[in-house]
Length: 391
Ligand code: C2E
Ligand code: CA
Ligand code: CA
Image 1 (cartoon, rainbow, N blue to C red):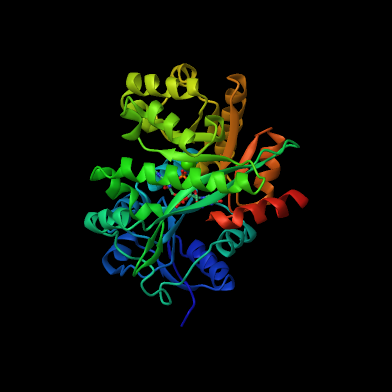
Image 2 (tube, rainbow, N blue to C red; image 1 turned 90 degrees about the vertical axis):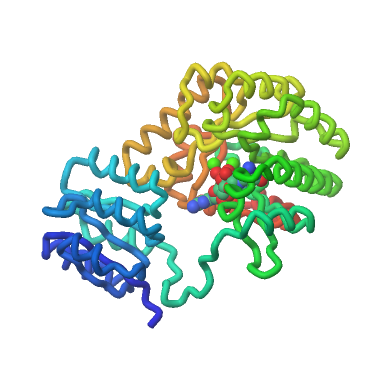
């Protein structure tokens, strides 16, 4: 059958029954475990969603998280706990750091609507239906060939202004048009490129695509600022500012039309060298953005030293904002801090209108997310902007 499968692990039978009832109404096929040890023995990786209670006698929820990490579990994970919210929050952080697909948490007691809302909002392709959706990352040799054969393409995702001002910006996101697997996302090949010294070449390919596209938009009468993701290794080339300067010139563009997105972690690897390079890029007129802000280890001091013009708040905080007051506080604080330092703030991962409204109230400058648009091929961008401008 095509129903998605949900497993609930909770030692309290009343609670497990409650979760089962809500899940059945939300269209799931449900299996219960009152004992986490038994779950670990019998689990066969076939659940689409796992609802896990943290506090259980014997094997507890944290041990289950460790187990799920060990088997590379790709089910969506929901955590529940009757303990204080701090514990739930730490467990949630642990789960995301271990790359589990954490999608939400609930503090006991919670209402029927809360769980139903969470479950019915999940986008799931039931494992029973999914054939070959999960492919292994292609090998480094395949990636080398892809670079030679020009198989990388670039998609663009708009960043939308939250106040009256209307600046058109898109982020360039690389994809691989694989001859047999179809269109592959960056998560399947960026890490390979980084480990095998291909990331610089990849970055230049993306930059050239983005600049050619920019030029094309401009010829159609649109000026769109384009941001490109720069990896840590590219930021260590001392002649990067000269290279970049030459490249924009070659495409007849201005540096101020490009934004370079850098993650905090990339920046911190060799701070002095990166600061040298970033400062010279900024002096040439390129804009600089700190990506995934909040997930790395930068401090206010570093933020202040580097010539950034923009902060992108990591989507893990933005997406949690509606359900997690601490995440909302973090978002609010980043916005205040960034504005004090004269930076523009972009929130990524905006999926709901409620989230957009909240960000607008907090005076966040721009937002990016599925609510507005998914990443799209370059030739759809002009039409998207003219439609968006009307609404
Ligand atoms: P990122 O820089 O944080 O890019 C944003 C990612 O969030 C994109 O995933 C985008 O599709 C996704 N996203 C946007 N809005 C939403 C939303 O509302 N909800 C959710 N759940 N996701 C949203 P994508 O394209 O798969 O890229 C993943 C990561 O791969 C990027 O994260 C970036 O770190 C890396 N990447 C992409 N292109 C390049 C590139 O050209 N060079 C390098 N070095 N890294 C790249
Ligand atoms: Ca980015
Ligand atoms: Ca990001």
